[in-house]
Length: 116
Image (cartoon, rainbow, N blue to C red; front, side, top):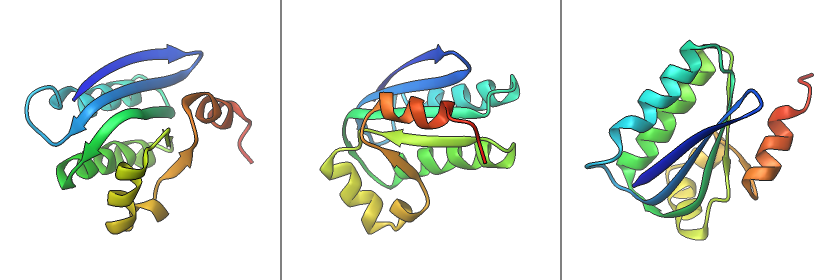
């Protein structure tokens, strides 16, 4: 798994690619989200468009990031999840936990909208 991070205004964006199956290259994901949250970030978009596959370890990474943000009053949106990724999330029932958008631009618009 590879990742790139950047800020879009005050929204932290993590672009993931490859397979989310543990191993090298995955340790930094949750650390980056925790660091952003500790610096006051409350809105994170995870661009999943180039993620080919994830296993239970990858789901665990997403849950950890989600929990970190939720515990500090933040929100996270998964953007661009492909059919294989969605199949795993449905099978594990996390499709009812996470918020999804079709692409990262839609996620950014949703996160930028004023909260009710």
